[in-house]
Image 1 (cartoon, rainbow, N blue to C red):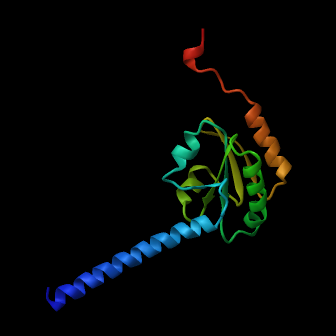
Image 2: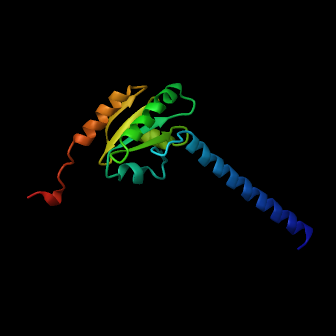
Image 3: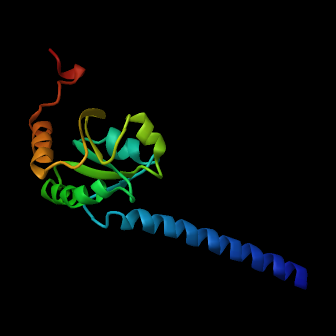
Length: 154
């Protein structure tokens, strides 16, 4: 191998290493935003599977790193996620990274919490709310019976 090829290979390897490092940093940043095992990191890529196709109700917190009220609400979201583990899903959407979801769901302020059931938004809150407000909305979702499927009608 001559010196020119060695330099090219070294440059390619360096560039690939840098890209891998940047991808890892982005993943770490999204994880660090809510280092909570009970909360999903929602993206445009996994939103359909995790939210729209979910068999249980889903609470989705639209937040931003720079948003003071979002930081105030974050511990409440974590408490609710722990309290309702197994009964609902809880996820967060970073609004700066997933603007398409912000637009799709007409999120106009932060934090906004959307409540999904059967793939549809059924309720929402805007701003910092007390834990009991979230609990009441979740309990209503859990108490509501799913409509009968067309196959089960007589």
